[in-house]
Image (cartoon, rainbow, N blue to C red; front, side, top):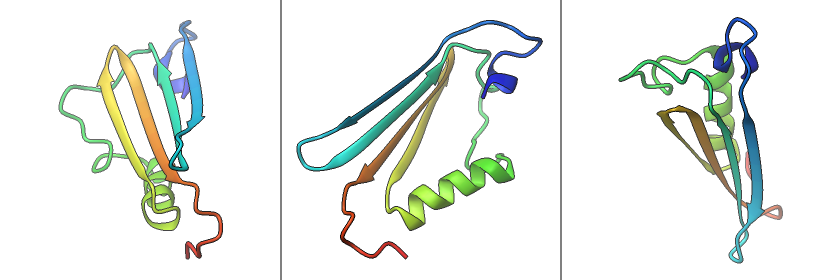
Length: 89
């Protein structure tokens, strides 16, 4: 995240928020105020092996949801159901 968000040893801010809703949904918000991504880039289509792994793990193994928002930096939102007693694989 640091390498891409803040190239050339730039400085910035990264925030991480984690909370659980009453229905058991776990929300993870990651955001930075770095350089962001090029306009029109779809990270699900144009991503690295690392991001593809994250999308696959959250979508298919954890039955969650990954969304992102590009603009002034990059914001990620992961939603996971806290269903620890249900088989995931």
